[in-house]
Length: 371
Image 1 (cartoon, rainbow, N blue to C red):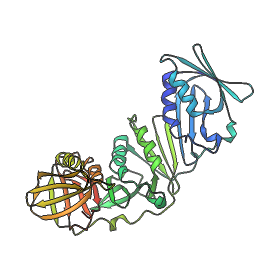
Image 2: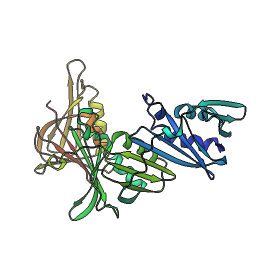
Image 3: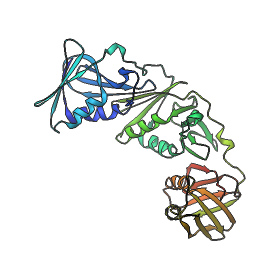
């Protein structure tokens, strides 16, 4: 294998794929990137056995071939080369060493056999549909903060997506929960997604996909089966195993009989929570909300720091006192882009529904704290 490639193009592709590689690997080949050169294209592939990222980039291929090289080391080398450098990659006749040349710089990297590199991205996936990149970004951003990080409840460590219906309209619904809060987002069901299985996309896959979407401007092609999902766009293909578990019946968590409604400006609300919670202590960062007709009073107390209160004008008429984790509350209010945040409450011990008054596509449920 021998090729020449623009340094900026190679660096961009390496930046995309190398993040899938775990820095601490017990299997040496998983630390490597598979480089496959053929007919004017260099294809880079990395995997951790659960997630695989492949990207194709234009290159001047002089001799086709394939090699695996240390992913993070190669990324660091290319990152430190001069901006306008042309990078030459060549496989030694022994097949055990790849040389990297740029100007007067010359590196020799140890390689591992291509035959040892595992590939998970060639599975058959019967469900196929497409969606705009902006819609997939919104689906992830509106729900990912509520994913669990507890390994014991592994089936909550991701986003659950499935086809559903709302008021007779077919929707694609995404749900995430950690047991303390729940985020649900829905959008019109893409054509071809009617028969898709309900699947749980792992937390790492969600994070890697979201990073790639920052640069995506095209339509995203989504393919999935009961065990894997694939996203393809802009010369990039991300394939991932799905979480093998059953997502809980989240509909049971969404209260149906909350009768106390209050509306407040989300930016003023979030900023006030942030200020008042400066006083609160412990992991819970508890903040008490007291509703008294047209006024909301936020308060926090700490034996060590003191106390804090702040009043907000609201649109409401009910009286209630309830406590929340300040961080969880701010995570939700930061997702509300409109001018109105609606809280639908029952009592101090029951979950509260939070929504954007101008956007019914997202719904959030937050469990209260005893304060």
